[in-house]
Image 1 (cartoon, rainbow, N blue to C red):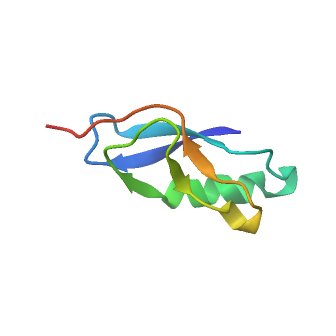
Image 2 (image 1 turned 135 degrees about the horizontal axis):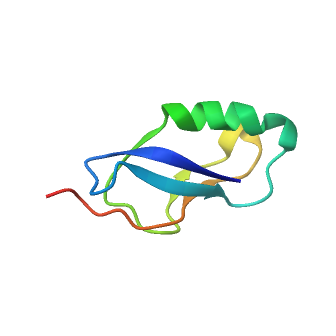
Length: 71
């Protein structure tokens, strides 16, 4: 699953994310609602885990690109 998360103080306003393993289809919309509320601080490196054990399903939410600090 791919989605975007808000970045605070980043050179880009959003960072794309994915789950670290398959996520239960019946909980995808709940995860998207949770990610809509999530804000992460820059800098972010591709592969950083931004949310561990999302919704108790054992899957992490992982950044798929780098976002540097806004100057």
